[in-house]
Length: 455
Ligand code: PLP
Image 1: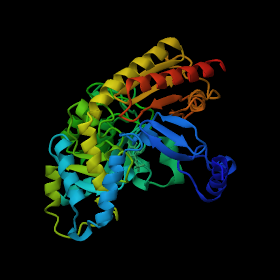
Image 2: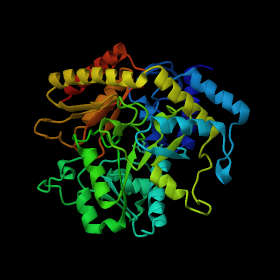
Image 3: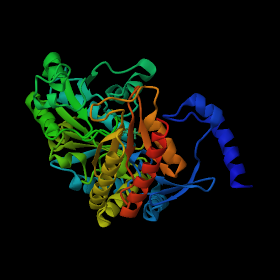
Image 4: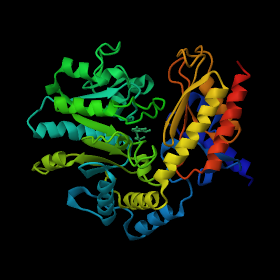
């Protein structure tokens, strides 16, 4: 059977039997999968029909070590041969989860010295909300329940984390949500630095705390660098200001490091750029580079110690909390990340990516606001970026550039949730080299050029 025949067969079955996440279901039921991946090596992925693509966003910003890493497969195999799965409920444990915890607390900043394991990012954030509220319960502050998040923050898709997500399409899907989770109106603006004259000050984190009363607020959650909201790097001093705000009002600071964590931004964690220690740190994705489903919530010693006074069964946990195979992969992932200096590579290649994007910014008048931290990068397509004037809503600039890149063998991601929003994100695996960065920029250049001709 030819590969095309197999593709057609799988496509017909896929169309009929699978509802895909973050996909247009109507369109998918008509046209089926765009790609069916077969294999990968480094930054490259091959589809069933034999075409090779550069994975320009590490799939979902998670395949940090790149594709086809045999050592990760072997770590998984070795653990599976011993015991693929055992539970960590009822005080049971396993070596991989303990060794990984030891290693992770060593690389996290400050006294983030205990972890609660989950199987992904949404579960980690959901868990952080529950642990934060539960900590305040233990401390006798039972009204501290409110969680404040930011516009354009993305925290996941469980009922609680979708509510914390500040992207309307996700936040409003299915119409339900925890009413005790509110969005601050501005996303990453100077008003959080204390500028009360800022036009968006009303609705800022501080103004919400003042309105609701600190006794009713449990935590503030934010991404050190926002990812799915369109790659937004906070203004200098922002994270420190939020930390100070949380200290002032006795509120937890939750850092959602699901994308930033484990080297993507050129430091081990996003908060390390600003030397901030959050109370909770949520991790997933880069923890295993996507080779196994694993996440976790790190917490500071004071919080850990409060839970050590909780004298009863802790009614929280996932079947896959502390999954031995996933943890064995996570341990090997960290070992490779450090051994191969991949965080330093992310920083250096991030600088190269930045140079390439700045070259494109000079070349095309409608491409602007290029930004990055390490290998987490983005840019805007606008009628006039300097004046902040977006394209007319009918011009699908980001989708067009991403489609033109796809035709040329590069997978990158558009962000166009609202009319006029045209952001493109680039976030290749941390193993990328200079030649490959040049290739990515050359393809984006051609793709933007093709889009320019349609204007
Ligand atoms: N938090 C951030 C910052 C994310 O980017 C994501 C996923 O993209 C999540 C949380 C949710 O993670 P998961 O899809 O593993 O539940």
